Image: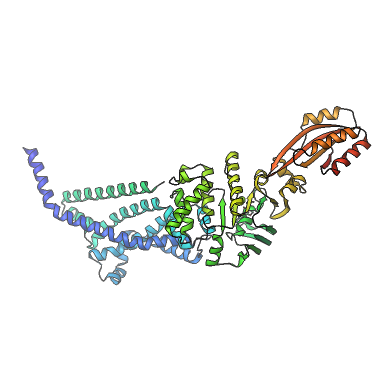
Amino acid sequence: MIEASLWQRIWLRVLEITPQLSKATYETILMVIIALSIAAVIGIPLGVLLVITRPGHILEKKWFYKIANMLINMIRAIPFIILLFAIMPFTRMIVGTTIQLKGAIVPLVVFTAPFIARVTESALLEVNKGIIEAFLAMGASPWQIITKVLLKETRPTMILGMTISAISLIGASAMAGVVGGGGLGDLAIRYGYQRYEGDVMLLTLIVLIIMVQGIQTVGNSIAKRLKK
Amino acid sequence: MIEITNLYKTYHSTEGNVEALKGINLKVEKGEIFGVIGFSGAGKSSLIRCVNMLEKPTSGSVVVNGLEMTQLTGQNLRNARKKIGMIFQHFNLLESCTVFENVAVALELSNTPKQVITEKVNNLLSIVGLADKKNNYPSQLSGGQKQRVAIARALANDIEVLLCDEATSALDPQTTNAILDLLLDINKKFQITILLITHEMHVIKKICDKVAVIENGQIIEEDTVLNVFTNPKNQTTKNFIKSIMEEDLPESVLKKLQKEDRNSNILKLTFVGCNAAQPVLARIAKELPVWPNILSGNIIQIKDQTLGRLIIELAGDSNSIEAGIQILKEQNVLTEVLNYD
Ligand SMILES: Nc1ncnc2c1ncn2[C@@H]1O[C@H](COP(=O)(O)OP(=O)(O)O)[C@@H](O)[C@H]1O
Ligand SMILES: [Mg+2]
């Protein structure tokens, strides 16, 4: 009897939390998708530039490489929770607010774009120099080398890199919740930490774990399919 | 077709400067297969890479099909490069693309329409004998097959010149021969001029018309392959020839000869065509009181000619031996007296 009532109570509690939980999940997914897309649009070209402007590469520009390299290191050295507050003026300048989804997206992008740039850089550096030379010898332009050699050859590695980026974004987006960005992190902190409702925290964690697992699984299987 | 004049290439690095090429002059005629041979570090790769400007020459001129390559930049250079194919020791294929795609990509670079690409790639793949592998990935191919894909890719843009940078050095002897046959084939079929570099004399003798020997960034000997084989001038050249054609008598034969107490000379005879020496030797033996004794014999194929090499002992009195050598020389048998002391 006691058993049944326990399960019953748990079930009722889950039903009670579900609307908030699904809303928070939706917000997190939205945050991750938007931030990842914008960060990729900035980070991938940046990563490509970091590779091709290196000494001895197809568009050698030493000063650009050095400056970009230093800038990325600087941003990457800042813990996200500090970055979040440190760039608030910048965030306000860009989107007019530092809270809600809009306010959270900016720091998430600033955090993730350099990460993606590094992921792209290390993937592209794995492309054999000989292949690039073969294409130069065939009369390929720098743009053709980027699209038909560098990015094409590294698709599996890039997919895995984006998977890691997405997962690190989930973590960061939870922190962004602290400044009113919403999402699962926000929920966990508000209920679990501030109101001592541990069960909400637990459910939030379960959803986060499922998300991370899901993304990794999908990423791995796409990468595997692309790999030859 | 390729004319290299006074070519210098110096690499600058933190450890100092390396003068890889020091005044190279070279002329490759249209339709010719020209081989450059040299040991590792001699400057072969630097030389061939200066032809399509993968390496920018420090000074000098490189003219390919009438175009001064050193003056070209941007789109002009890319257009010129499209007519100069290149294949490499390590094939350099896209691992993520099928055989078909690897060849097609060369045509995509010049925005060829899709139908034309399909037709042309299929045709190229049958030329190199890989029609049945077109949907395979490079990782599923042998070294020889990979080089065939690379050759098909190089041919895609109707090239006039093909540069081969140690194209067979990663292959076993049998596969090497098959690839060399293919190169010879496309040279004949499409009149493609081939400049190749190698460290293997076998490659030179099998397909080249002319050869240059490079050492320390300089060309130390250059001639038709046949001339270089019959009459090498430089010690390095001789060493390369030795690698495929034994010149020395075996120790045991030598010892036995030295024990014999008779007046004789040991001669090295070189002749083109395999039967050229036999009648002459018979004639000497008949006309003069001498006894030719064949100690070793060697016949090698140099492209489409046969080169024979005999080492004989010619015994008799000194005057007769002298007269015999005279007859040999008159009959265009290259004769060299060997001294074994
Ligand atoms: N990129 C480079 N930087 C510095 N030195 C180089 C470079 N490439 C080649 N060299 C040097 O130039 C010389 C000739 O090299 P290379 O042309 O590769 O010879 P080979 O192909 O005959 O082995 C060697 O001493 C080599 O170390
Ligand atoms: Mg080399």
